[in-house]
Image 1 (cartoon, rainbow, N blue to C red):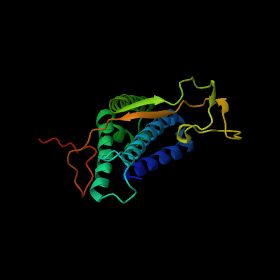
Image 2 (image 1 turned 180 degrees about the vertical axis):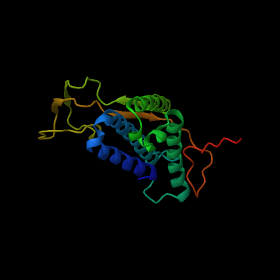
Image 3 (image 1 turned 90 degrees about the vertical axis):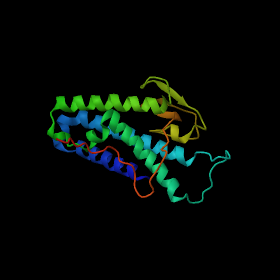
Image 4 (image 1 turned 45 degrees about the vertical axis):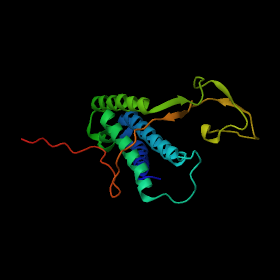
Length: 203
């Protein structure tokens, strides 16, 4: 698991831990939005990692299980950090997640969440083709066929046998049909790219 995914996981755990504290009741909506955004970013990182690991080589065959050279590993991690930089540039995602929102009032947090949502949504739509696993409305009755893809469904409740299963759709799920992340022309082997540069006004 990459450094970025570990950081996002820690942030997500922190947000959920804060939501359990007594002082978080007035920020419940915004903490939920923040958790959703972090989970979304974590999902993107994991999809990119999975895409890189399963990317065919030049001969069209799957890569072998031999360890990757350090330069190749750094390239994959650098491209992940680069996309995180895109989320920061478009939606100020890192600014929002690293800020202590307990010091803001509800209106300020709501305005920031809208900027993050609009920018990150635009970035996802530009680089990913994402669609729901199920098209039915949440709350409707659906049937999960036998032999379903294990990563496309999470079955909850009384599960018996090999299927098919009939139940209530709690969440439609999401899947990526394609990924079109820009490739980095040059990757330094001794450091990851900067997510966002420090801005200094010279007077």
